Length: 293
Image (cartoon, rainbow, N blue to C red; front, side, top):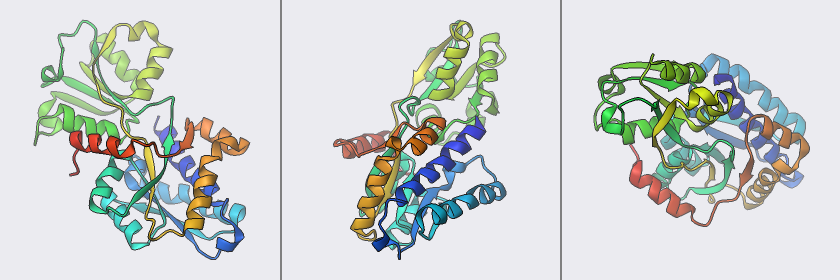
């Protein structure tokens, strides 16, 4: 699961570079800097990350003739400031992090979304079917496993919708496995080895398909709302319009390019999509449930 998460994140960077390949030669005198949240690579050591990211610079040079940089940002605040200061031209945020950044840096605008229609961004609290756990109030003191590969929205859901205010996981739950293999976690739930599993949507849906009999012994006691997908953001005051339009058009057409489509399918990215008309309303609702820290 962790290796797939790296592949998703690194391939997202690769497709971003493909988008840059659509920029015309008249624009090639400018280097394009892409910033990405460090939390997207949360399970990747810095030493390995440096090795994994090096090929992308050469890919950019060989395929586009453009010079460019890939920049990791430690926080949404830093990434937002970099965009507003013109240090980078394009930033990749978790959806909720973009909402937080826009509160502080209102000049930021969404350019497009990175969407996976087969793995929606939801969190699941799963228990044994014969468990006495009926609601979040019954979770205190229980043993819990966090499925390996859970994305950042799962952490956010845990902190805001499950844990009481100013209470850590260690104080709320009786026993915690922070890095459980998803299949082992659900098997352990069915056998009584653990009482609760907090899972991303993809591991839970996969387990139901692979082991329907065991999954039938489990039930979902709580489901989060659907989170906003990853947002490709920019600052209109700092990004040339021609570069922006070429970049956007290249990204949106990536799933129609056979080579890019295969890469997208491999890492389970359905497509890059335009910003929906109700995006601002979605962000407002997200901020009500998950206010900026």
